[in-house]
Structures are given as C-alpha cells and as structure tokens.
Image 1 (cartoon, rainbow, N blue to C red):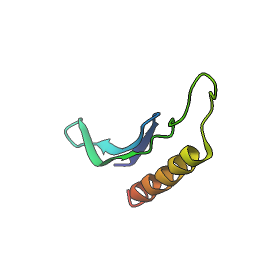
Image 2: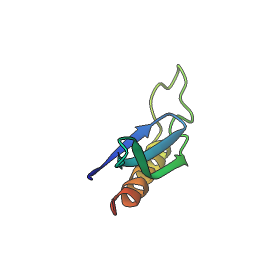
Image 3: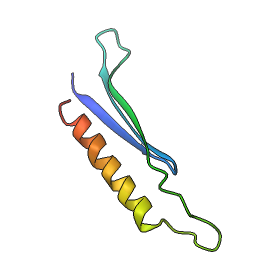
Length: 72
C-alpha cells in the first residue's frame, strides 16, 4: 500500500506523520516525529513577522523531517 506524509507547521513545533492504510482498513503509522522549532520567537504586535533565525530553524526542521519520510 502507498504511504502518505503530512507535515504540520506550527508556531512552536513542526511535526511529520507518515502513514498508510492497514490491511484491516485502519491507519498504520510508519513514522511520527516532532521537532521543537519556536519559529514564532520574537513575534509581537510591533514586529508581526518571523525572524530570520526562526525561519532558519523551521527550514532545517522541515529538511530533517523530509529525510525521515524519504524511505517510506
């Protein structure tokens, strides 16, 4: 059965779930991982945008999670 990966990008963490349909009809989780990134650190009403270091942390996390999902 083919697998599907979903990435959830939140303000404090980025997660991946890789799953496929099990023979029983349910969902079989192949990989689940959360990386704390704090991409929203420093955001305020005065500076309502992501800082460069937060975006860098987020991009590094996404790359790591995609590498985790690649074998599936």
